[in-house]
Amino acid sequence: MIKLAIYGKGGIGKSTTVSNLSAAMADMGLRVMQIGCDPKADSTAYLHGGSHIPTVLDLIRSRKNDFSLDDMTAVGYGGVVCVEAGGPSPGLGCAGRGIIAALEKLEEKGAYDVYKPDVVFYDVLGDVVCGGFSMPMRGGYADKVYIVTSGENMAIHAAANIAVAVENFRDRGYASLGGIILNRRDVKDERQKVEELCSDIGSRIVGTLSRSETVQDAEARNATVIEAYPCSGMAEEYRVLARAILSDCGVEK
Image (cartoon, rainbow, N blue to C red; front, top):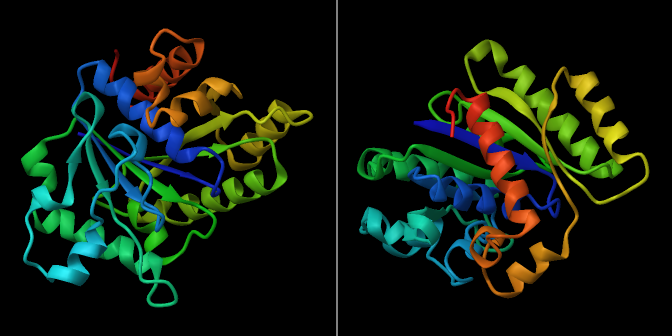
């Protein structure tokens, strides 16, 4: 089982990227689980037609521990097992602590043993890398961290902070930094800026995604690009990225 945490600044296209990677890997015959670790609880939406699924924190609040693993999950495109951690009620509680509670509950309910995924994605908001938001980096969770960024200054700043967090955990046997995913916004000198970031943090660009209206068109249909436009150039870009990440983890597809 490969466990991968995908981090990035809010709004950078991280969840879209993760969902398309999940769909692409599912099409390759892999069993995939995607765990949304964002309080908005919308990481997996385009894998199951845009419908709402109960979040782990909602279940804990309303039913304490009186719920099953099936109540926490939904099966989406290609058999991808979808989970949303959720967040606290507005103004109450800490979203980071919510991630901790959700991941602990998944372990308690035996999610990994029951579903036996080949690949687990943790989709994590990376604007603030502290407390629960760093939980997927810790021992027993992700093996590698990949960071989604564009060439925009705030996205690069967030990516650098995430890389620092990974480096700070290195001596504890936590997740290592797998690389940078460049999700292009077509800003000036974009690739050069991201390559400079990679040089600063001792990493590399593992894959590049084009800015494409195909992504918005697919989301308007409440679907991933892989499902809605499987023959498109954009779908192939996600497949290329999926293969690059798998190869980086020692899996050839």
